Length: 246
Image (tube, rainbow, N blue to C red; front, side, top):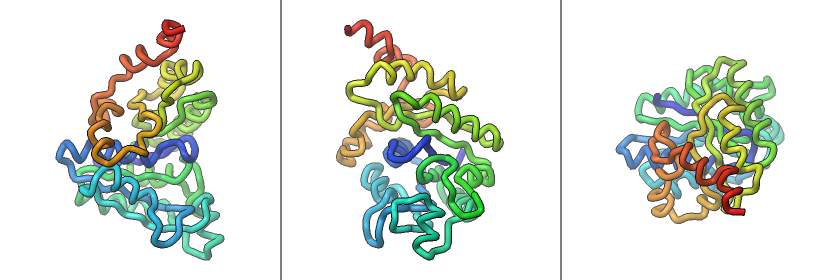
């Protein structure tokens, strides 16, 4: 597996931090890692974007590539149209990732927003790029109420397109999880029919780079190169733990 597409069930849910964690773990294992950001929106020229944040957190050893940057914080196709710029199309993403995969052991493709956000006015999406690549998608989701629906819909959309879902990572596990979050630890794998592969703690993105890199393996399961264990985490943080503490 040389290419993993990182998508999510929405925006601002921890995709960049999760991407950085996967990259950091792979780098620590001696792998050459590249991160591709097809469309960066809401960031002006010269301003740091998601790719720069991945470098800050994962370390200078990661190579990053941004295909296009649009200044307004909108869906990529809308942002491109309003800026009078050419959109990024699924085949652009697939071609760039495939080229990187000839030079790197692991290529992470971080999408913008959710899986089916439009890249162009013809309706091309990140799922289409994943299908062209034959690459699995790592779904980043939220912890709390509503996540079962959005995660299940994302998983169903992947299956309908013949794209493999690698698993689910909770992009921001709360410091003080509510009952819904605790219950979702057990319910997410059943609803999405894919394994839970990690839980990144709330605030992880505010850590210094060295602290982030030291901690990252504890947030990701073995399928992503880490040491995190879904069963023990659910036992410790799930609904039973909440009942025992009350």
